[in-house]
Amino acid sequence: MHVDPARLPLRDVHLPPQPPWWPPAPGWWWLAAAVLLLVLAWAGWRAWRHARRRRWLRWFERESADGTLPQQLASMSALLRRAARRHHTGTELLEGEAWLRFLDGRDGMEFSVGAGRLLLDGGFRPELDPEAFAAARRLARVRFIDLMERGR
Image (cartoon, rainbow, N blue to C red; front, side, top):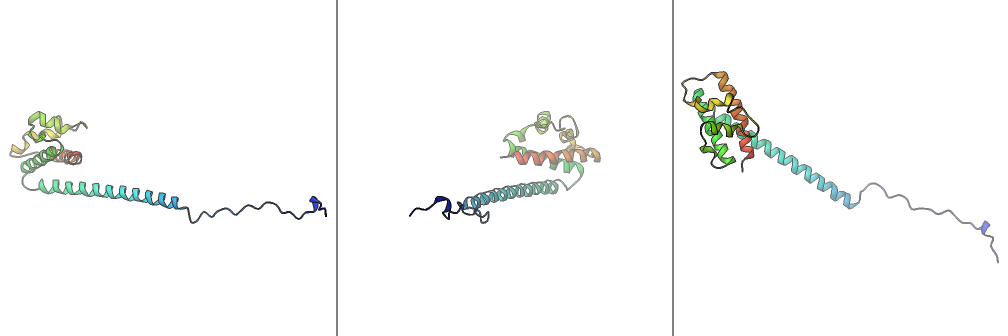
């Protein structure tokens, strides 16, 4: 028996259906978990740094809030020396212009030429100009946090 090929009931090739996009393959789950862990670790690290910074600011404010303006300035100077010791041992022993140049740091803060000069002898004066004190306080607060963050 001979069959004519043109008359055979052949069907076209059928491909299997595309795989569904959901649920993803296990590798995608592992990647998503790794990315989520990285994001959570980063957010936790940022929250920890922010809380630590707030704690240092509260410490600065608490320690330098009591007494007259010269006493407060002396307290700020003591806090800066403690932070400097944490940053680099031996720097708390610097005096005069060397101490102010250290406080200027790499950022060029205005201790040796600006409001920070009040730290040299302001703690020994009977009275201080409130505006000069406020400017020195702002500068000291910024440098205190900077030294604490760069510490060991």
